Image 1 (cartoon, helix red, strand yellow):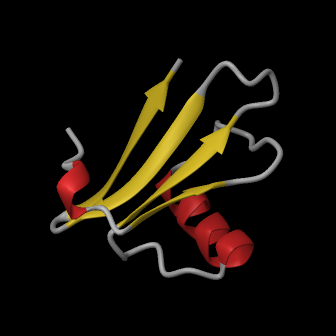
Image 2: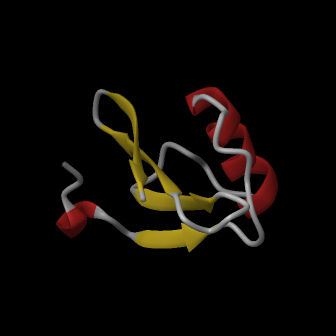
Length: 70
C-alpha cells in the first residue's frame, strides 16, 4: 500500500499509454514525458486508451511498485 504522507507530487500522463509495459518502460516514460527522476517521492499515473484502467508507478525505499486500478 502506498503511504500518501510520503508523496511529494502526483503526475498524470496526458493521453493514453500502453499498459502492457513493465516497470522499466514506465520509468523511461517518467524521464521522457515528465523530465523527472522516477526515483523521487512522487506518483506517476498512466491511463489506457479506453480510460477504464490506471497504472500507478511509485518508488519506495527498496524498489519500484506499480498498481493497476480499474
